[in-house]
Length: 187
Image 1 (tube, helix red, strand yellow):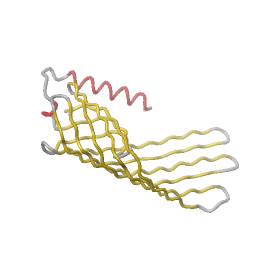
Image 2 (tube, helix red, strand yellow):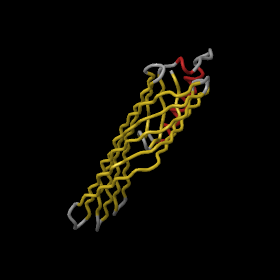
Image 3 (cartoon, rainbow, N blue to C red):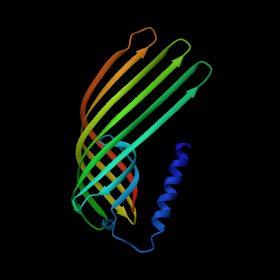
Image 4 (cartoon, rainbow, N blue to C red):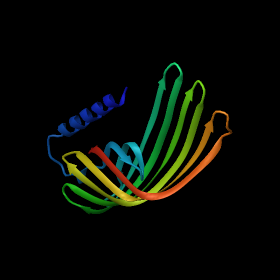
């Protein structure tokens, strides 16, 4: 199933869940949330969020991706996955808004190969990211929209293999601004 079909199914699921509840509830009555998120602090993909108590929530997320493109002379393959975890502490909550402090981390693996009749190149990357920041969540009925801003550290351990050369490692370490955004629904 391609990404567009998955995205349409997820949107239809959001609509069904939000319309299946005829009475209006305050978002703080729900313990769980599910959705999609892109965050270079705590990970990419589908997430599950669980409220632990009035002050804390924990969120796990992940994604698996595989892509192949072949023609007569070239072959490109990419396989990657990530798994992340985020702890959120509420700072302010109202009927439809929530501000929170967050700390998150994720592990990312990427195996990318590009082969042609003359050359080939493979890059394998093991990356670890960790960061802290501030998040904002807006709730509309059972939908939620989130934004995060923080500071992160990441470390990439790459091994690069090219035709005719021995494999060589590359280590990148960097700190920078981290951003995230997500959409989900509560249940």
